[in-house]
Structures are given as C-alpha cells and as structure tokens.
Image (tube, rainbow, N blue to C red; front, side):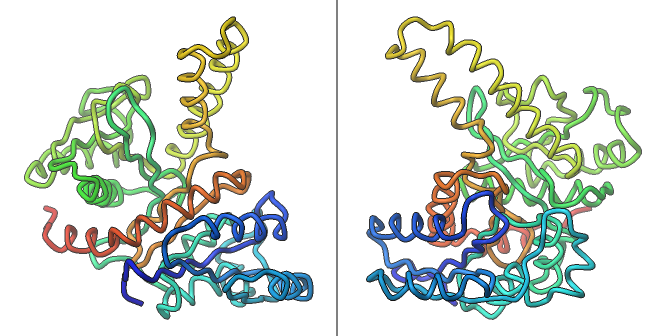
Amino acid sequence: MKNNKMSIKIGIDLMESENSPKILLEKILDFSKSLKKNVSFVFFAKDDLKDEFEKIKKEIDSSFEMQYSEHTIAMDENPLLAMRRKKDSTIFEGLNYLKEDKIDAFISCGNTGALAAGATHFIKTFKTISRPALLALLPTKKDPLAILDVGASIAMSSDNLIQFALLGAAFQKTRNVIKPTVGLLNIGTEKQKGTFHHQKAYLELKKMNSYFEFAGNIEGKEVFEGKVDVLVTDGFTGNIFLKTSEGLASFVLDKVEKNIAQKKSEIFKTLKDLKKRLSYGEYPGAILIGIKKLVIKCHGYSSIKGIISAIYGTIELVENNLIGSIKSYLESTTPP
C-alpha cells in the first residue's frame, strides 16, 4: 500500500491491553469521527468477541473492518513458542496484514517479544540491521531525545549498539535535526567504562562522525540535560531506565503538586504537563524501528487516551513516510 496522504489504513490489535476490547473499540471509533483525514481502520480481536463486535458494526455508521483470530498471546508467553503455536493470533495476523500491504501501519499493546520477533520474521529488518529496537521520544531541557532500545530485546552486541545509533540518527533526521548528536548510555563518561560491548561500540562510533556527532558516553544523570539527540542502549537497560524515570518523575511531581497552593498557577500547569509527558501510560507508543514497515508498540497499561495519541502519531508518521526516509538514510551510510 502506498503512503497516500489522502488514504491511510491503520491496523489495531484490541487484545492484551488492560482496557476492555469493547470500550477500546468504541473510543477509537468515536475518535475517528473527529479526524479530518481519510483514515480507516482494521481491528484485530479474538473470535469469541465476534458476535458482540459485529453487532457494534451494524449499529455504528462507520466504515471499519474486523479480523478475528482464535488466539491471543499473553504477556508472559514465550515469543518463539507463540510463533510456532499461535500463528493465527491477533499480533501475527496484524503483522501479516502489514506484510501484505493491506494496512499502512500496525499498533499493538501486546507481548513485546512476540511483536518484535514476529515483525522480524514476517516483515524483516532493513538489510544492514540485524535486530529491531523500540524507540521512544523523551522530553529534555532542550529538544526531545530519541532513546533506543527501550525493550525490544535484552540481547546486545557492539554491532547492535552501532546499528541503533544509525537508526536513531535516521529518525531524528526525519524530524529535521540536520546532524544528530549521539550518546551511549553508560556508567561513566570515560571510554573504558562499561562492558566489552560498550567499549567496542564506543571506539566504532567515534569513527562515524560523517553520519552524526558522537558525544561519547552519557551517564543516566545527564540524560535530561538535552546534550544529545539520540541515546543508545540495550533493551534491558533502556527499559529499566525508561520506567525508573517515569516512576521517579511521578513521585517527585506528586509531592510538588500537593504543596502548591495555587492550583491554577502557571507552575502547576507546567508540572501537570511534564507529568503527562513522562507518564508511560500516556506516552503515544514506541516505534519498532529497523523493520521495513511501520509497527507501533503501546504499553499494556497505556490509557485509552495514550492509545488514541499513538494512533494520531502513527497517522502523521505514515503521512511523512518515516519508513521510506529511514530506508534512504540507511542506504546512504556504510558503517565501518
């Protein structure tokens, strides 16, 4: 399916979210009425919901498609076993739709490992990318920071870290950052810090200043200073960092909010906005970057508002041809 600004089709997995599939469907359909763009949806759900959903389809004057599967993949299931045993699950059905160009993008709150493994297996990564990463945008004192990987995989090699740097830089270039600055999340700024993989990646990234500016190692305390445009890490560390940041921000901001007398003050409004931006439940999804198609992962406990925000963001990414832009950037680079 071509990225036509006048016609976009988004696939949405309704299962494995903490939200009721029925309520999620209804809220998304309500949201779709406010869209002033030609956007349609394909919803993926378990087949025991068919009667209920088909009734909704008849009652609502809205054009959308439903696809039903026998299985869903639980959050605690082994992704590789699920790929063998549950090929008809909502996640894999959605990915196959994407592979066959029946939809322009696919959004899921489901099992992250299954989504990443399925996307790698069915859709494939770009030629120079061995595994995908989850990329999230975080606010800083300056411009938004792209951090990856935040949880697609816990495996790591120096090659993965280098590829993540290229993917993150490519993403920021699509946001008009001409020459992104890349940092490597580490326990210290010295080049010998971290694991063997970190040390090797550091040396290789230093050679790549024709593609981006390498700022060296970045400690966790420096992340929100806005010194870099891209922060590279492995999925295990990145996921812990992201969730710890969310928890700490929520704790501090709750304490501050309770002690602000003027609830209508500008300071209070600013704090509320910051808390919202740092809340993973409200965050508009993470991009499974490195895959040849557009896949968005929302957290299982994302609010309906957060999922709708992800849909809106996905529409913009399709319109801006994110995947085509990243492909062009990767093809123009030849890492050492």
